[in-house]
Image 1 (tube, rainbow, N blue to C red):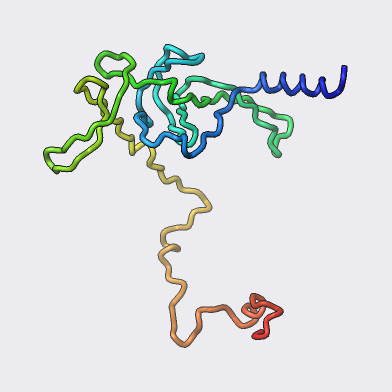
Image 2 (image 1 turned 60 degrees about the vertical axis):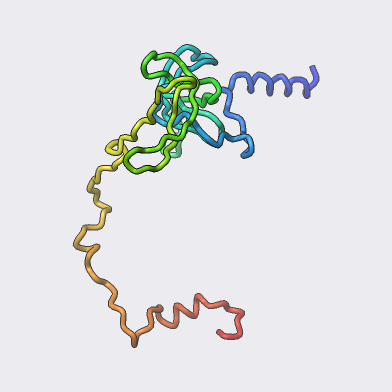
Length: 198
């Protein structure tokens, strides 16, 4: 068997074994107005997870794709780390699903529906807002509210933290008679050695 034929067969086998990755999407082909946001409950209409529902974990706008919690899982192999060169790990991660393969779920009928944006005037402020509605009905699908408490980081004291007393201590007092630059020897090192003004 010719060497080129063997290498081509190996390349073909390797590409089939690897999980499919999301392809590049040109900026002109990216979706401008997204009807699905993080936290929405969606129904998967195509792919190996067809017929299942899940919550959107992340919206990948540059790839026109979504990450759905614990759906379309793939195995990622992590290389050995410098600290432990013998240990290799396998991690289960969500792979992207194209937005055309999912639909929003109607909150009343619990069925996948098509949606569109409609301008609605707020009676209190009088401002126009864009809201999602099920196509052909007056049923609004509100956007999920972000859980702010989930994203607030709790402060944890560590030995490398600077104490509040040291942070408040004044270490520099400006004086008009003293220039705010280091000594002349340090300035001489910073200057260009080939400059005529040195």
